[in-house]
Image (cartoon, rainbow, N blue to C red; front, side):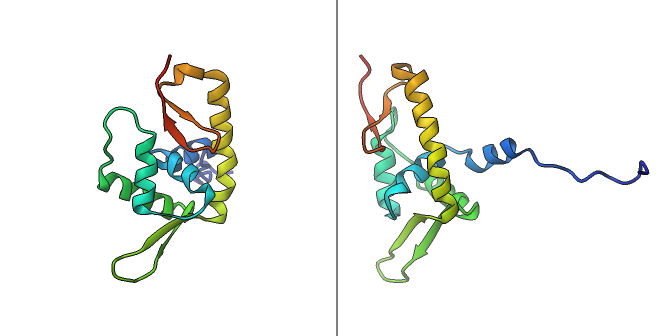
Length: 134
């Protein structure tokens, strides 16, 4: 093969995956949608329950995370077109296949991080809750 022909560039699946899920709340949003659709305010409330430190989420940051998850095909945004506005977010088929990956990460954290993980843990329902470390 002549040296002038460029080889097709391969994308590392790990790097592509990391880029897709990087962000402050993306994993938590997907995890929290596993039980069904949620509205923006419900997503925000659930995320706030599991936060340590500042109990605030900048609306712009949350909107950006939701938009990126929608663009990556993990979640779907349904606008009902009514006043007052009603918008729901739900996992797509692709997003549902990602839930076991997050569950594996959660299980790994339980086994290897324990109390050292900080003050956020998953309760039996799988949603994050704040607790105090002993």
